[in-house]
Image (cartoon, rainbow over all chains, first blue to last red; front, top):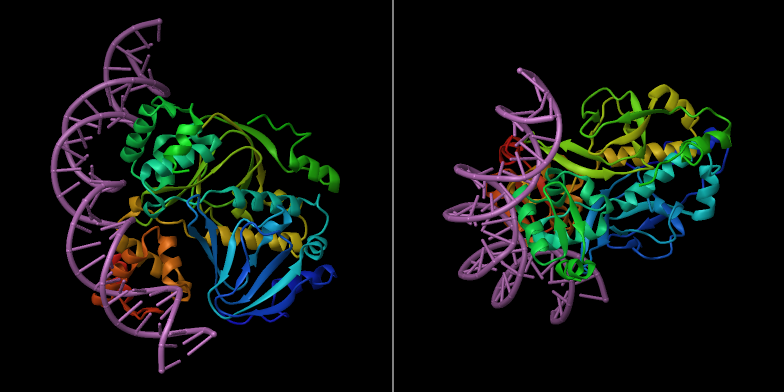
Length: 209
Length: 209
DNA sequence: CGCCCTGTTGACAAAGGTCAACTAGCGTGG
DNA sequence: CCACGCTAGTTGACCTTTGTCAACAGGGCG
């Protein structure tokens, strides 16, 4: 939780090592401020020197679900490198010192788009953006969560029940019941090893819009 | 879900662009195989061409919690670049075609360790490894999860209750009750805005060892 | 100094976890 | 190629945990 001075900051060290200019500019933040909002045009990347930031996403029922906590030494909003809009909202929960960089400057700093390290970085970011947050009881009933998951996950049928249940934060028995209920409603077809969506509308209704 | 041929594979394209040799070698996998196991020495990185892979972590009660699903076009085990042992277990749940690379070859492919793109990549990976998985009812009672979370998260006290609750997958009221109970047991001290661990042993007992 | 937001506490109902018995389907071995 | 056994999934019954609603209180900010 100590201050990250520019001499010890990994960004400026990398810049010096490669003889490029560090694109970041320091910007103090007060507790309660919001660095960026999910859905906004992603024009900037941040680096945390001091402070705590909570990342949240809008759930489909318009509640804000916390996704992760970020502290000193981490990047924020790197998704700007791969998507036009932010995928998360960054809420600064303490007094903080952040550094900002505009996207073009950041892109230049990262080097050629075809460089392996950048390809790996962008792939990793893409995966992080797409990864659904693990569901929990507070997100709605098991039935809702299961319906949402089937709608969201193409690979739903490729995963053994056991893992699907763990991923949904419910017991395998509960998953079994929820699937049976969705099948009775005609939303999906189920065998012991497969799940096939057949009525998207019914699924959406079960998911609670 | 289509095959990723080497000509269209981002790895070989990046290699050709930079005139380096692609370090990956194809390796078919059968359904049910395990690419790597959490805790094993991290010597290899994978790239998924076809198939579905479930990533799991051991919870503190020795159950296996699914963390994420990976499909074609993603890297597996990139944590080998930053940690000596794997942080997750990768279970192949379908017939699959993976490509493997040894760590030294992968490291050479990624380029100089001081390059900005690589610094950003490694920082992102470090964060991904450290990010705790969102808790859910299936992981134990609210009290247990709260105790575990306080033990694991240094920044626990830096986050408003509301977010902490969402992150633990419980209602704010439930968090309040759990904290009150831990305070009664003498494990922590609580005010409206702060949480201070004061008896680590009691916390560990509440967390269920 | 006062308002409003965030967190706390209480009561109640129901969602879902647990335990147990059962079955389908797959893989192994004869 | 078939039979057997084991694992993963299903279904039922019960009871605890926790989400929900409501009223209240402390603290921060204007």
